[in-house]
Image 1 (cartoon, rainbow, N blue to C red):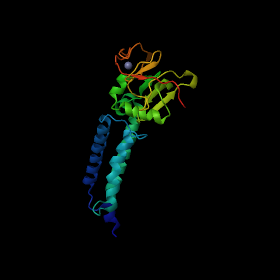
Image 2: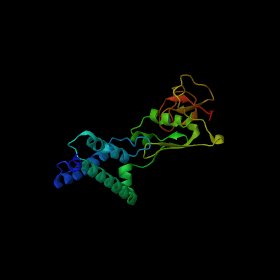
Image 3: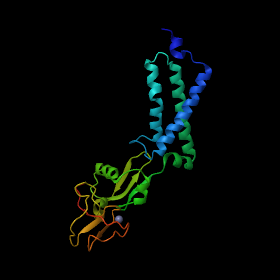
Image 4: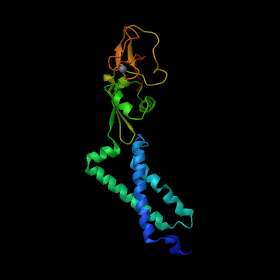
Length: 224
Ligand SMILES: [Zn+2]
């Protein structure tokens, strides 16, 4: 085995520099695509960490079994990507503007048991996704939730009310999140779009908060 060939193959300095340039372009491209795809990170992974995984994926794999891909290429790719990552984190630490542009900012989804509809529309998440996240955190209805925030890494932080402060709220389990068909007098109803909860004189009443006319029976009791 010729170690020099394994390490260098026929790499010239100018090709090494070309790899550096390619890395920079690809890194920026991956960040841009991920950022403008609208989705935030994938559960605990920021878009930067995903960018690293994507960038390094084939750089790590190819030299393992292609005999004409010398290790030095992978070494250059790893070094450049790592430096770019450190550089972007440094920039984000130094500048709030850059941080917001690249990473977004935490966004309120629920405030005092009510959904922040405008903010939810901006994110490319559906109610199903939010409700699923909240269900996993043992939330049964929005009357239990003081705040829910979508973090920049895509996680949902939920701050529930203490037991004695729980109010009537919009149910988020599929069996209960459905349009009411008959009015029960003196029963609370919650707007299915924004979570507004009120007593109704008829099921045709518009929601005072968002003008929607779809009401679900509110919930108060919860197991947790
Ligand atoms: Zn509403």
